Length: 201
Image (tube, rainbow, N blue to C red; front, side, top):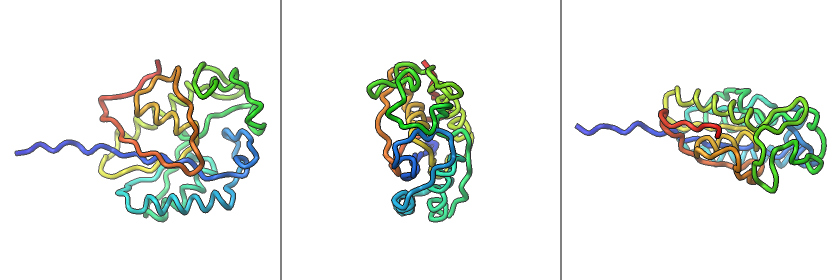
């Protein structure tokens, strides 16, 4: 009798569509005032069509409005209720939220020339990269405890998507490449089995 290999969980990581604040170049963080632009709403429908033929069993979304607005047509197209999840939020930038992103220094972000140089840097009232890493890790632990029969769509933000990718790929946080995550981009990842977990190093 052949033993069946447990099915690996596939994650589809989706960044929200273009927002009014993206268009202005402002730091959004966890301020919830940004709305999807007309282009952003079109991107949401396009992503929904792209994922329509995948065997998706669940759709999770950050509880911030721009992500929920992105996730709504995806969930509707796939016939899945959207589950909101605060652990998928963008990094909180504290007093730096709402200012032009070009004015935020590496001393605040912990990122220089596309690479993480200080995982504990933070703006006053904000989160460090290590904080975001840990809450994304907790979310992945939740997924590992679920039935793996079917793919999972996760609608989130540039920061949380980078962290989820780092965790799944077991990449070190210090020195992590902080690459561009365009609006409405899609990343396909295979979630490792429960005995393999990432750690902050």
